[in-house]
Image 1: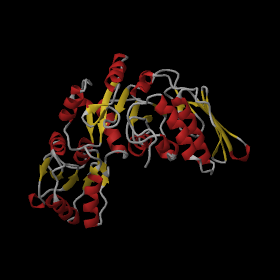
Image 2: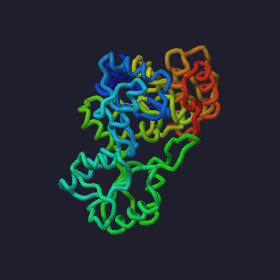
Image 3: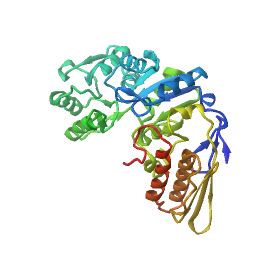
Image 4: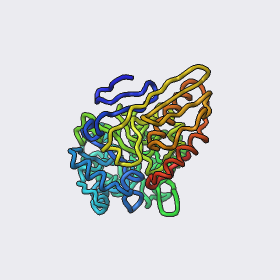
Length: 370
């Protein structure tokens, strides 16, 4: 085991850490993803307002980091405040802001930028003293593309025309879908893909998991020891790792047990919790002991998971904290993968999911799939 600069303990090679103090005491700014972490659509995740109020009462600074470039920070802040999560405009950092800052660092004040997106992108460009325009005939010097439900064929055609003309092209994010009532709908990644197919050009991307949005969050908050909290391993947690940040994975959103067990090294979180209550908790150390004949044993307090050649060798006792069981299962599965074995994800997922469901973990697709 090794102690990290923030005082936590890293389990050898698997990514999970222990923390002898609540995370609110180890990190100076808590960066929170929104959908699946703080709210699900128009409603708050159960317990989220109370957990965040308690974190603030302990002195934690909260900031909200989103790939959604459609809504300006003021609209997001109003939404959060309505959900009993008091929020100011400056507490919200969007991929539109990251894109505008990137462009401003390369362009002079007043430069014209072809804006393919909505009000969030417009306000971000204006805040950086850039002039949004709607057509190549307006003589822009760059193109920026972000999601808007009002984008149509003519907007995408104009973007393709500008990109083919050689203008630098920045995309706020590549999320393939956006959550809407009735199921996922095409997101900015799908719309960017249309322009990519039409031009054969790849955009520069600033949203999660790319480091630019995390750098923007640090710049705006002045964080020295930030912690990223998210429900998606391939955006929130991968992005945190790429930005050199610690990450807390919560089970209230898109990804669940199976997703965690198969997480690649670059997606693995530092901490795991049911929900945002994990910010207020001590996180137990996870120990991993690879043995002979492909045997891997991982334990977290009273929970132990043993795999032999990737297969569940002994069903762990259910009379343990189910999140400790998940932590041990993840550590065992990752170690097994890293040693060239294929872990029995199905059996592990079934056992851990049953324990979590019995303990009433709120919302989310607990089993997970991707």
